[in-house]
Image 1 (cartoon, rainbow, N blue to C red):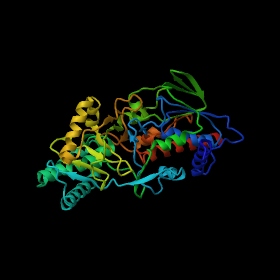
Image 2: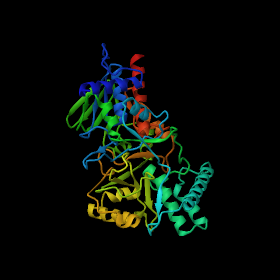
Image 3: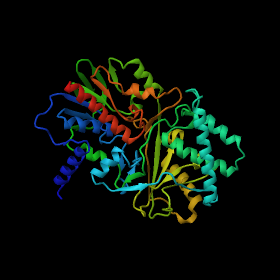
Image 4: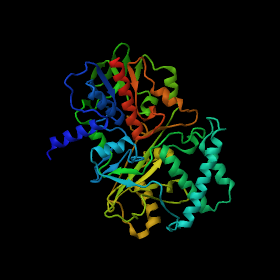
Length: 454
């Protein structure tokens, strides 16, 4: 198959997913739409609008597409710097896209983990079952206390209460702390003290097992971008909206009939775009009140794989928070010698200020405690820096103290049927997910299509 034939297959497949052909229509719609951001929300909106003949231009600040989806190949292996996992393979639009595009997907089990004590001993099945029982008890306690909680109550208070109220052994306590960090903090990118108890785990999920892509999630965004008019390295500084939209970038000004803003919540929080007129009060309040977390990853490339292939994640039940890195093997090929370490919240911020030698030393020390002399020094090490990234300032939204689900809806609300908002932080059902961002882009495209046809 030639490259042109392959691209045509991709284009046709993506169009088939929504029931439309993405190939240009005979009669183009004269309406123009500007989309700020070439992440998956912006790409999804652009594709749908293009199928209806709209004249669409995407303005992207980075010199690449994908936003917080970024598969880095600089080490010769696909390293998922941002989003990595397709959560739920039944009904998930990203899983459907992967299937339509015939991409190589592999099951990824996020439920199981291998944990080791400070002597490098693997926790027994009996110990794991005991800890699993404790964690389920904590979750049950959270559920029972949510209803009476105020939106100023944090997850930290209930966790501390539970851990101090029972006669746990030191190993039990440390293991539970690791599980809590993995299951709660690493998923939201925030520390327990910042996560709302009242609204914890309010989002929905798709059923079925989780998946990863053999060559990375960027395969999805690359496919979605085919044939679209995307202007990279166009940093938006100002958006004016009245009867038309005027967007100012360092590369010039652009005008359109409609605009969709898909930038991350962190960009809005840091007021990197000036809106004229100013955004409505409830939208600005929601931007302020919503939580915005960060997950960073450390990637270590070794000469050969030394860790087990039994589970996709493992960790050391240590004496300090710095020992509690969650290691993940996201590589579907069993002998791929690339390992990622997941850190979140305050530790994610700290890693961005730590030099590479210290990162290698500390991470290697943890792995040494687990695997002893089986390991050798890593050949290459790199890590993400999402907090200091001026085009994201973090990785995902969550309901923090003073937040409420209505904030997501307020952020999604259009202004004057001319300025629209998409992105994971505008999806109250699936916030902080790739599929949530994708669906939000399609949602705003549908709004515009309906307006233009009315």
